Length: 478
Ligand code: FCB
Image (cartoon, rainbow, N blue to C red; front, side, top):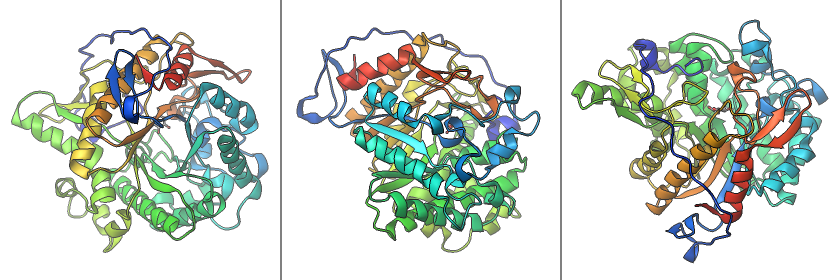
């Protein structure tokens, strides 16, 4: 539980053991199959996904690029944080990470060999704007141009995240996201990217998981910038959302052709029993986990019950200015869903684990939660196109990661059920393409389907990579 601290957890504490055993394993063949009429189908060939389904994988800049001082890149909060003693397991840093910056062509070929249709990556803001604003670092921008062009040349659609937590340190020195101006700085940076790559990027994501910045970076303090101030955290959350809205508006002001939305980390919440108290706590947890992000972006309001949890003198109340919600709800074209698992809460508001966890003990593995989540978004927020921007698990099984295959298979089956229930799910990006720097856990948690030997930087397919390649080739699972 080191990484994610839910409010409910902070309030109460107890986390029970897993109630369910390992999920069953399934075998897979390798027959090319096609859905009649191009939609999702189920038949003797297995679960067939819609024609043109975007089979993808995801990474983020600080987690894979390395080259933190190359070609004029400026420092981000993660460079500073990871170098502070005691912050990261084993004193690891992202200085070298998977050295992706220097291995771009090899990694692009790796993606092509897997058959990826879509690749989600993030731009390092301080690589493009070393101090967060002002003059563009041409070499930094060129890296992303080469990346995008290299993807397109291989028939892979780029999905570009603008903010995956690496705020430029120079802006952090001015308060970072605590400062309302950061939303504007972010939109200016976004505008720079839209102008530079807008003619060739089909999909933009503004923010990755603002919730994690709020809960882990500003409340638990175990992510950069390492603060522990829940009141301030909620101000940061509001400014992040404002930055999202301003970036959406910035895109509309350019000739960029792509679509845009946010990537939110969402977790269905369930009462642990039938009591009114547990149901009430599950609603509160849902407000904190999901609705406080979904409602502003898609409905243009904060949920009343969530706002009611903020005391009269909470600084977030003053931070929400007239007109902000209209900006935040500027029409998105799609929503990115990061799904890692479900949340169960008791009548006293403590979280209990009701399913197995992965090597990441905050992760409660429950594929049905993905179905519940996707159908709930459709029910409560309408038919906005959805892309799963992250889903995956960490395992200690280095190469023969059958547990990951089972995980992926079960989650894809849940996604398929949601498509069959008319959810507009367009694509799936598994986390992660390759092993990488997992934030406070350093290199101890392996999330990739491609193994990275960090001593030699050698990339090798794990069993899950070969399996996923087959899934993509078949356009489905057995
Ligand atoms: C998500 C993050 C991603 C990675 C996975 C395991 O919350 O967006 O960078 O750390 O968790």
